[in-house]
Length: 175
Image (cartoon, rainbow, N blue to C red; front, side):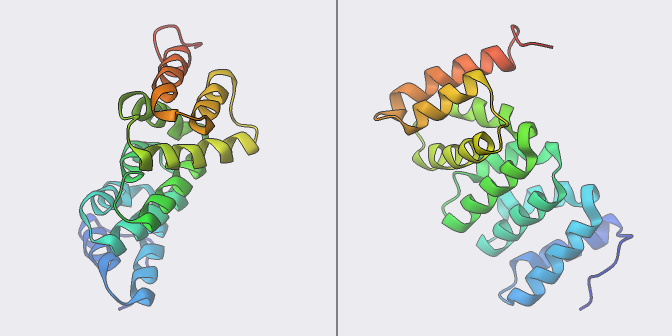
């Protein structure tokens, strides 16, 4: 099976995506690279694999989405921060880091609404700390990082996330 093509039809993208869940690591990697080469045309298929595939498919989909860096994948990547598989969660957090600022709105929204998820908080902490290190965070997002690193994040994160969301993305956001 040779997947290296650049002019994929939707059908070819679907067929290639099925290989993301194979046991054979070499074939999975080959399929992922082909989907990465297909770029934005493969994003919806990769999101579907991220949500519904086996753990191999979810992992490879997250890796491919990190490479493609399409903003529309941010919500699905945030959901994947709660995946049962640690490797999938890690790959999703790395993909969100690759999205830079474009992945922050759904991440902050999730922290505001699903703050009781330990996996979500761990993933968000990794993403925000990495972006902080790259000097990509400002004001209220720094408060979210502090809340995530505090003694009782389950009680402080939702308030910090709500404030950050309102200030950055709500009706009072700077345009």
